[in-house]
Image (cartoon, rainbow, N blue to C red):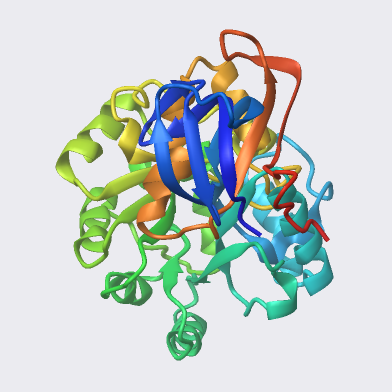
Length: 364
């Protein structure tokens, strides 16, 4: 259950900033009273208290591939190893992965899915927004997949620009109620193909289409952006800071979803961070799947971003405030403790779902 009571955390993330030892009253997870001044009768809470975190990008149907994909082999190797086993994760495996993440305070997830997500795969305190993901360069099969997905009630999204035949690209630009979430400039192979029409992807894609479409990627970004409440570009580890800033200025409803743990696992690279402090409200954080990340919890990602020099407020805006425009956890909170007196992460700092003695949260 969401927590209730009067609390005095060392640090509180509230309304886009950190507060030092404030007083906050929660009722079933909702803030009903806040004061920047401490209250002597409030329960002291060690470390940092924050609303529960939101994982803006994962693939729950790949949860059974944990520790099965070699590290640092690049995108084509990953696709070939993952492809035949896609969608085979049992509900119990997904449940276990979500439960582990929720215990560390990550309680909402946006998941690219090719297969329906069973109800028994979702813990009672988790919120999952599935996106039916479509792709295909073989035109006949691609149309069949699109028709099948379009009959289902949940939102759907294209996988990436390089994985769509031209008819599917046109369908991908149709109106959608949830933000369109697109893998973009994830790998060196993808960047070489989209920008220079060369590299390993050229040969790889020809096994599906003898003449893969030569895309004007900026044109298609504009088309996909036009009829969506927002466009999320996921990973973007190979997009230059110059182009990131150009896109942020040109498209006011465009956001970047960064997956630092997955980027390093697959490509030994960190996502672009240089503009994050300048545009803190235009970034979100995800983990990608367990095939390229050790957990669906955002705690490891938060640690790596903090170690890279981003401030607490910038990171927490990305995992708390920005994604709440579209998806909300169920009034839960996360506690990060212990921290140094200055609020820094220590080697033994942990993130965990916040529980008060008077209102414990069922961890099953």
